[in-house]
Each structure stands twice: as structure tokens, then as C-alpha cells.
Image (cartoon, rainbow, N blue to C red; front, side):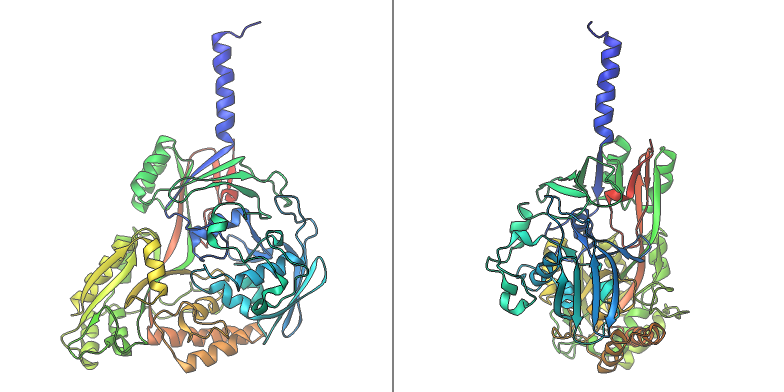
Length: 535
């Protein structure tokens, strides 16, 4: 019997509504630059990667350590950590996750010529040996005690050893680990051929500058099955078009709507979530060179090498006004590099003073009564209001006599240039995803030393032997109380020297349609797994 017109329309609606409900459409503020999990540690990259790949241990939305591919772990000696791998863990192709995959992953991290930045490499270099007593046990040995190793491993996704050729894997990165095939490049990952993970989603399509489409891993081994059959990720750098897309139904969830639009979002029948983050925004200064490319001084030197100049620059900045006017109140002023209350942060840290008159005095005391010329470099498509933030800081510096100009660029141009140390003062944003103050100090403040795995992001070549000594003692101290005290000393020394001028801590903001519940994360990753259908 043929369907009536009304019945046909109801059936068509049911089918289309059902299909739509199975697809989550997300608008991103910043596009991931690669699907390779070891290419570049940025939040957009990590958010995409962690849909597909998983680490041994992970951080909860509130930055608490919890099991992932490892169901348990413990220190079995001062320099050895043992991880018990979950025997249920499977890759999306059905292959079991084993100790071989752990060994291959850490070997590939250290044999990755296409990587930008060395964060994961620094972590891997601390591991001097990996033993596998059986297929589901690994023992990671470090040269010296390293109490935060599990926290650091939360940023190290595991990849499938089956993408390589070998007879027997053994941990010897300098000599190839027994791998006889070529090490994969970021380009090979971006084609999708090597993207085999244990995560809740699989890569369907990845085309830079276009949509990224993920499909549900129906064989996912975890306790919670993925809610969405398909996830579509679209980069929309401007907040206005992202919001328009949400209101028109083009997107179900958007990240980083402008705070001034939250009332409109609510009045339009949509919802939003705000989550304070661990991301500190800061300017890193070029201190190591006597001549800096974007500094011009009447004396022909580099004024940024004088601590009084750096302190003056900090005093010139009105952080509260930046938070209120540039960030629309959805941020908090930073007086150190990790929010108060996190491990190793300074409790009751004094407010960084806004005092332009004293700043001018400090410049004069340093020998620059008439200031100097400086260019601030920043992204214009990576952080919340990054270009506007840089312009505001430039205006504050100009008011105390530092004639400041601004050079903003896309992050695809900016990050490689910053890694080559082409700037004099560069905007940075760093989320301490280990939940400890040691994370920022390790990458951005300590003297660069690849052998010790520190200073990989210290593009300003800042060096303070006293700070290095205190920090290195901290990360080798197994006693939590003493380690926290040492980390606080490190942070205090870093803030006093102002090699990195802290500005504010971002808050993560997401807006979404009715019928979805979304839980924000302190690391600001936008995750489809955090979006739950409610109808």
C-alpha cells in the first residue's frame, strides 16, 4: 500500500533527523596543522589527535591524572616506572595494543625530522631504557629520578608499530630501535595512510584548509562508546562567522565565541560553557643575543638584556584593563605562569604592578631615558584575540617611551619563524597540561639543554644558572612537599627576571545548540567526546 503524502514526509523527516543527530558539526577557531601526533604540540593539533590516538595516561577535564592505555602505573625504583597496559586495548584495525607499540612510539618521537618544537622529544630523551617483561608490561627507566614522568606522558599519544618494518624492537633511538623501514614523515601521516589509533574515532578525510571528517570507531575498546557516528571539524577563524554558523544551524558546537556575544547566544535559545584554563598568555623576550633583529637602540645594543627594562615593560601593562576590554572579562590577570592552586604555583602571589611612571624610571636607570624601538610579533589566528592583545600591549609600551610596532601573521608562518628565533618579542600561549608549574619552566625558562630535555621552547635564550639548579633539583625530588617548594622558588626567580612577561590566563568558552550537553576542559581542547546528546 503506497504511503500517503503526510506519512512520506514524516518518514523523510525521521530519516533526515536521525542522520543529522548522528553527525556533530564543530566550528574551530584555529585549524589543526597536522594529523601527525608528534608534529607540533598545539592545542588544535592535540584536540584532533586525541580523538584518534590515546596516551598511556590522560588528564581529566580538571587536569587530574587518570588511566588510559595503561590501567595502572607505579614507581618501582627511584628511576623506574612500571606501566601495566590494558589488555582490552585495541587499534581501530583490530590489532592489540602491546609493549611493542610503546617502544616504537618513543623511538619515532626521537626520529622525527619533520617535527616543530621539541616538547615530546625532551620527554622521550629522559627515558634511557624501555623493557617489556611481557606484552602488557613496560618499564621506563630514566637517568635520574623523574617524579612527573606519568604527567608528562599524558601528552604522548601511542601509534601503531605495524606501520613500520622490523625483526625485533628494542629501545635504542640513536641506532634505529631495530626498525628497518624509513621513519614516517608528517606528510605521510597527513595522507591518512598511517593514521591507525586506539581512540574512539577514525580519520575519514583530512584536507588542510577544508573540513576534517572523523568516523566512529565501532570497535572502540573503551568503556564509553562514541556518541556520534560522524564528526565534522571546520576551521572558522573569525568569531562572527562562527556564531552566525551556530545560530543558522550550520554548526552544532563552536569554540571561543566572543564573550560579548554570550547574552545573545542565551537569548537565541542556545547554551554555552565557560571553563577556566591553565593557558597563560605571555611575551617571550630575546635576551641571549647582543643584537636582536627587531630592536633598535641609540646605543646599538639589546636593551632586553637588562632586567630593569624587562621589569619596566611588565609595569607598563595594565592586565586588568586587557582582561576587561580585550578579553571581555573571560580571562584572569596572570601574576605567574600557572593559576594559583596548581602544583608548584606560588600561593598568594603578589599582583604584578601597573605603574607606568615607575616603568619610565626603570628605563632611565637602565640607560634608556628616551626608550628604544621594538617590534612585537604574534599570531592573528591562533589565540583568543591574539592580534588585538598584541596591539594593546604595543600601545602600553609606547606610552613609556618604547616605540613599539606590531607584526602579526598566520600561525603557519609564525611558529616556524619563532622556532628559528627570528623575533625579538614574541607572543606565546602555553597550557601546562601536566598540572604542575614544572611544565612551563621546563620548556620556556630553563637554559636550553637537549641532553637534559629542558629549554626546547626557550627561543629567547634566557639563562639563569641559579634557576636551572633549583628546577633540576625539583624534578628529581620524589617528595611532593619539597618538590612543590623548589618549584615555587623556580617560579619566583622566573617572574623576578621577566624573561617571559605573563599577561593573563585564558578561559575556554564553547557555545552549542539545545539537545547537547558539553563539558569544557581546562586544557581548552575541543572534544567530540565531551559533547553528549540529551535528546
